[in-house]
Figure 1: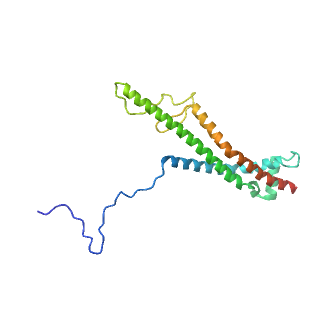
Figure 2: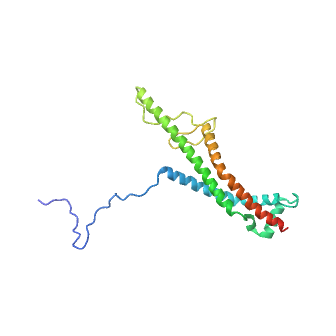
Figure 3: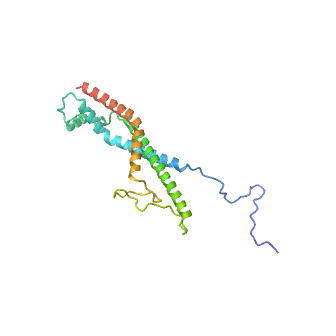
Length: 212
């Protein structure tokens, strides 16, 4: 009796046999913590660049007023008009190259430090809650569903705050700790950048003042 199951077609003498698509081909995936870090760095860099593009014209006017030889008689509007008349629109963004790179780097460090600190404390809290959950399961005669025990109130001092996907949040004190640590780390980046930016703008302003 012939076998009813279909047979694969004969590939022929000059053709190699075809096989179904194999799932052995693996795609390279970055670890989750690396993806989070790259997201923080990207968001901080874009935010820093945007802040410089918007705020640098005001910094230029401010420094020029501070270094002006008119004795404070020139107003902000007069300084802006003179800059526009003598240097054009590009005069408001003179000396922007160094702040552009510096602020992007500073914001990237700020976002990265804040995000990494928050994720670290959240993971510590999740592990603590999981441990408490396991302990409660062992001690309780009633079967407890395998869900993380989350505090009933996830807002502190009456201020609602967004939760993570699993409902775990940090107390207000931890956010102060994260902010303090982030500020401490960013100090080592911010001070050289501020000095660099001030000297860059002041150099342009000093040459501008010497011409008048």
